[in-house]
Amino acid sequence: MDAYREAAMTIFFGPTARTASVGFAILASLILVDAAQAGTASFAGLGFLNASYPSSTNPYVNADGTVVAGTSNYDNGRSEAFRWTLSGGMVGLGFLQSKNESAAGAISGNGQVVGGSGGTNEVNDGAFRWTDATGMEPINDQRVAANIVGINRNGSVFTGDEIRWVKGTNRAEQLGEIGAPNGQNGFSLAAGIDSSGDYVVGYSSTTTEGQDEAYLWNGGMAGLGFPPSDTMSFANGISGDSKTVVGYGRPMTSGETTAFYWTTLSGIQPLSAPAGLPYTVANAVNEHGTIIVGCATANTEETDYQAIMWNNKGVPKTIASVAAANGLSTTGWTLTCATSVSASGKTIVGNGIDPDGYNEAWILQLP
Image (cartoon, rainbow, N blue to C red):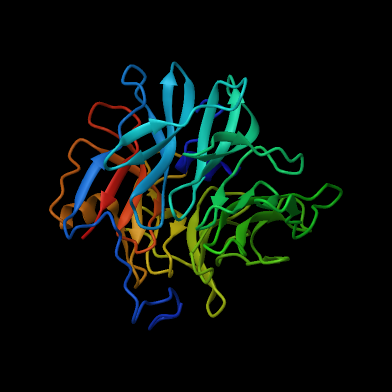
């Protein structure tokens, strides 16, 4: 995985479009409302599985904003996938047989299915699917890679690494690749899936040595190009309606990242950066492409990230300022990255450092 996405989203099993201006698809007649919203705004940390080993990170929220999946420490340096609800709080999802670690990588739109990876002592070696009825089950298909990073709305289609897998059909499709670097084998890595499960995004090798390019897959892989002045691109998320792709680009020889969005009408376009935070990464986008979330930093040293969002006019704001504008205090918190957003855009989750100095996942719910 590219170093800047690793910095933006802590990795476990290791040391841890249409607009008035061409762009996002604007909602005109359909307004989605999160079930979690009751007309009031709120901000909170999601907590920890074990207060003696406080750490929680990489949260993913379902479509209506009521369920979150993520990863928390349960022991010294060992992680466990969790599922969080407002009424039940954080609950650990357990481990694959004979394993002692797990990490969530995705949640279905209905909130009933969690996918991710399992392993032993920081070694990631198996993908899992979890439901309340079945618990954590391995995906016993040798063609399926060791991690799940995207699940469709009803939990029937998954994607991870280089595959798309449909539950109940015994069918794992290889996504392929854009091309192979000169004299090397090609590769691709998936990063997200739309609500139907028909579209997958990620990045792939090209025919130019060392170059990676964002792709959109729908039965075949199409490269999305690069933001201006960039020679590499990485797709991190896709809208539920499949019309908007988000991610970031950068030069091959520099860490100067530029968040982008892509639609069939606009092609790949850079997103504006917040004042003083020129290097940006877009991680996720809501159902109809009106809200994009990610992070930004003032340097290229992979430090001092701030969680940000772009509204339906492409205007960037820090999550802290959005919370303050809604009468919420984030005093003592450092909100480092927004990792996921609900269908309406009214619920945003992400990584942060809490007032006690611990890594803690958070949730922002807007009215």
